[in-house]
Length: 283
Image (cartoon, rainbow, N blue to C red; front, side):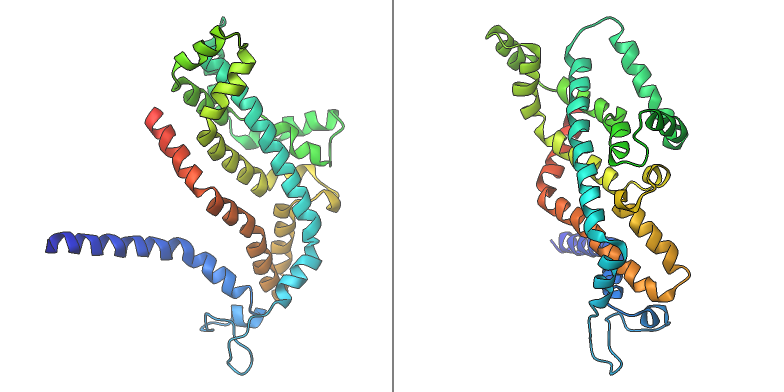
């Protein structure tokens, strides 16, 4: 009994250490975003933001200036528009491809699937120049569409959706076919609802990837009105490297940009755990 209690205390202590290790940097980031530049860069300054009299004081000027400096309203609209549309197309097309590889029999299916998986070995940066040339020839350079079109397909998502569909019993689909349902109707009405946990997981990860994407927008976007949150934060990081007064503004912008992703995780946490667990069981 005593040994069990000691083990439980040790487990809780280890978990608390992990929480501090993971949450600590973000907590410091949040508290520092309410300070001025001198407090952040001064060694031995208190963790909580304080005024000149030593009283706890949270400065909101950094957040106001961050919104004005970066035009965060425009960047938020652009980023959410791109991430939402790209995620919706990504889930639909990758689910179609995954279902085809899992359920439809056609010549060369396995060879084609292995070739698609082999493309995972190609680093993403290698495709920057070919994608840029294609986007330029399509007349989409420096547009929000250029941030969507190259990423409506994902080999990794195709693989996971194929594995998910392979784990479903064929009897449900065969019964629907006997009742006269076509292939697409079986896919849309039977397979997709059953794959909802995995779709939620892939939807969140795909949305987060598009939300945080920096390198591709950096090379394809030139107009400020077509910028994204990652580009705006990157420009602010560069500016704060030479201007200490912008450092707390950069921290404030980092907090604002990270809040939507935190909220998404908290809202869909149950579905994420369920999707990962179901994927692990099928694997």
